[in-house]
Image (tube, rainbow, N blue to C red; front, side, top):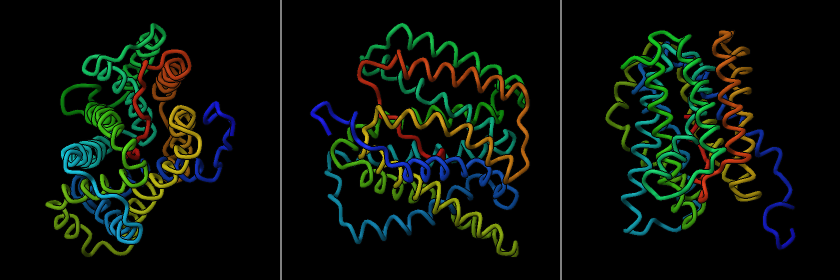
Length: 305
């Protein structure tokens, strides 16, 4: 590596693949699991599985415990970025396809940038605003082809609300990653999110009773891959090549989701979804290339969920 920073570091290809595939799998897996378990109990079950793994890792690795001053931020990250995000995400996926959901969630980086400009005093270059307008038009196009559009209580509105939770999470998590590292901070946040969702865990377990082994298998997959493996792999990628360089790989998430959704659930996206998705991705690419905020927020999504 030169003194120029991350530019010469080798990209951990396997870690990138593991993160993208894990997160992309969440979208069709949630759709499949919702057949057996209601949205909020499903979120509780998924993160209960993740919490067991994370708790084991914390006991073995013993990372630095959060300082008292950072506890409120950790609690907010877990409540908003994990619990509320997954409640809205799962609720939205009841009526929105996996592919459309992944494309709508792609608007989160723009929401992060907007919040940073309005509340944190950061500045967004002209191309950032142009990219935002382009992407928003793509969001409108996707929504026009979904049941209920963007009316209050529609699935598309729930997914966009989940994207906003993700945007807040990206901003709230940034100083924690700087102080504790991506892997340790994410582990604490996942554990907190699981605790917040605990009241719905009994309902989830009840829903699984008498359903056979398949729904249990889906829940375990959701807890292990998108919730744990995805974050762990992404933390390795960020540590290896830096936030700015690694964020470019997130462009692979939506196309990968569309492919997995077709393979796993035979989901064929509508033309409005594909067209709107292309517009959204074009806007995201424009902002990430030419219009980043002056102090760009950490682009580290939940997993999608």
